[in-house]
Length: 283
Ligand code: LIP
Image (cartoon, rainbow, N blue to C red; front, side, top):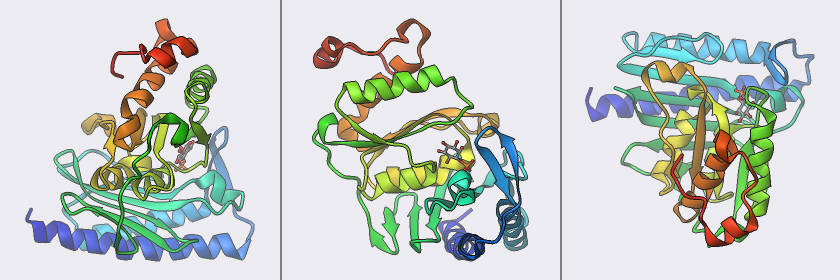
């Protein structure tokens, strides 16, 4: 696959994201009673998710019939050339009328994300990244913010009931213990886009799927940020820890995520450990 082939897919993904976003915006603004089902506690799927999922599969399969497609609502399987799609990331927000959700489209070759698009249809902001070519918001270059340290940093700490609440409480306790400000905004794709453009300084969550994060992780990488690796192959279908942030707070966030999830260390980091930064060992 040539660079031109990837560029063509990158442009097509942006067009598809805008059209998909228009469908979401119609449902969101119409206030029409939105039928939805529960995939789990606080984990709804709405008719808009399903309609957009179908729309994107039809568009991409029509334009690139040889490519593989993996989506949140229809599933799929790993492939050399693979689209990884979340039709609406932040569905709980969407279903409850909270204007914080996005369409997320990633294109991967041999387990590496080459193109990422995150479109917020309410603010009409499209975040795009092409590997090696930087990250953009509505066509303007974006960079992560140079945070001085925890006391100058905002972290979006996502949670779901897919992961033990105790670990999440440990994570939040450690974030506050280290002096971070934290938010929980309910959309990984939007959180990662916010890191990429410097609105916040970090995003972390203990269990997320590939479709929630692959496009957003490339945005952060191409905006000069640091990201944890997300396993490809069979790993694309499983939940994994995700961390993305401005480089100056990487070690601190890695340590506190580890402390929150490692059984033998499931304790709140003591202020002594925080001051001495002795919470070592990589996640
Ligand atoms: C959501 C993620 C969010 C997480 C939610 C949910 P969805 O994705 O973006 O970070 O906390 O539990 O997984 O289900 O709206 O596509």
